[in-house]
Amino acid sequence: MAESDLSKLLANMRPRLKPGVFVFCSLPKGVAIPPAAIMVFEEAEGRTVIVPQGREPAGAKVSHPHAWIVLQVESDLASVGFLAKITATLAAADISTNAVSAFYHDHLFVPAEKAGKAMEFLRELSASA
Image 1 (cartoon, helix red, strand yellow):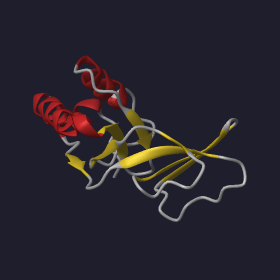
Image 2 (cartoon, rainbow, N blue to C red):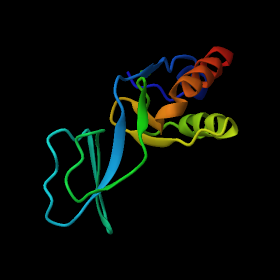
Image 3 (cartoon, rainbow, N blue to C red):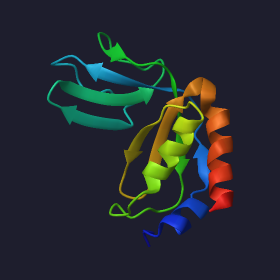
Image 4 (cartoon, helix red, strand yellow):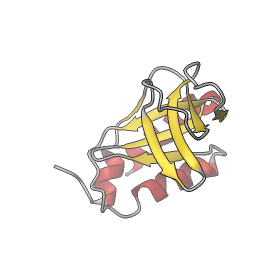
């Protein structure tokens, strides 16, 4: 069952670093969504996809490399403050965060070179909740 209590969400988030490196891509008009896409989002300016690094479609604008952290607690989409607390904690450690909320879990994309540091801060935040 989805959790909405902030202290329980933080205490039970169980961050897990997924293997691999990922990039955000902006696809030019007419470029098909690659089969390797793990997220697709439509914006007025274009279609954004997240793909494993090395699987970028030709002609796409590509971001810097990211690590993917899954927060394994099943969070309620109506919960308040969970991602705010997490992103503020990581921002204080100079770690940028791109958060994606899916139906069951929240997903964090952080600079690949800061993945270990991000995991440490997330574990500390969870332990202190």
